[in-house]
Image 1 (cartoon, rainbow, N blue to C red):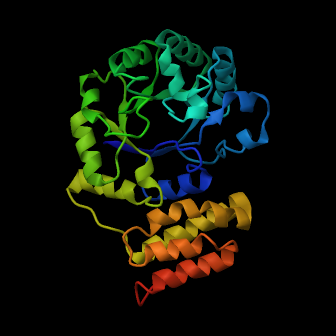
Image 2 (cartoon, rainbow, N blue to C red):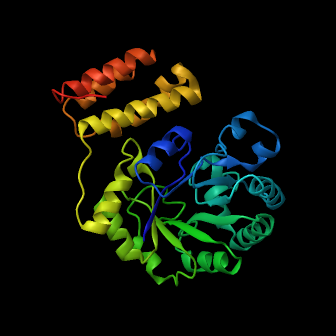
Image 3 (cartoon, rainbow, N blue to C red):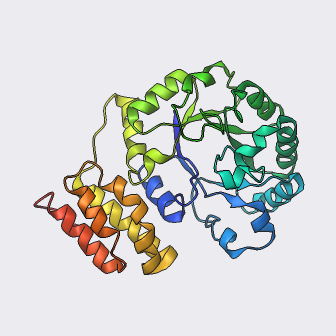
Length: 311
């Protein structure tokens, strides 16, 4: 069976969103990127990104650029968690400028050294999320390194680091890989149709959904339905409202009422996509700081779309 996961996204894949996506069918999820330097220094902001022990199938994703630092942090974390992932694909300038994330792909010899060291330190499942290469397609060499160094799973965003999110993800470029270990395709998966095409073109065993899940966590169920039955349905207004309310309540527990009101804003475009009057509603919602008033505004917006919505 094809596995479908939620990709790591800084500022998005916190505990609240991971929980919502898991309930809608994500087989596994990732934490936000955890700085190994921050973790080893005891930064509370960094530690707060770590999953709760009771969370389900979640990968703790680490990033950094120093072999010893990455190795030590991975060793400590692997004693607490069952899955460690190394970020070797983030294209954000402030990350790659320090040689971390996608910056690791600038020097594949150094990249191999880091992967080898982390693999030796991690006693649990170890995966790597990467890209096609730094500024050109080196995916065959990158994949060979990962297989030879004993990585358990590989997640590949089908763009180079320099591309960022421009252009179109080149799923077909992954078809040349021998898939000796479970390999997942990522990039430009916004619909169930995208997911099916990405699997067919890449020959991968699984899918990683990133931006396509923001405010639309039901995409995991839709992809599963489409792959298994060739069809899928859109969630009802009642289901969308219930999910949005649950998301807000989870954020309140994590970040407090004021924090929740601010955090949920980045998800509203997805939750209201395609609904009449959504843009005007979002413009108004962005100005609401009181969480009770925001929930009331959300309720009124959805009630206007349907005569009967019950909780």
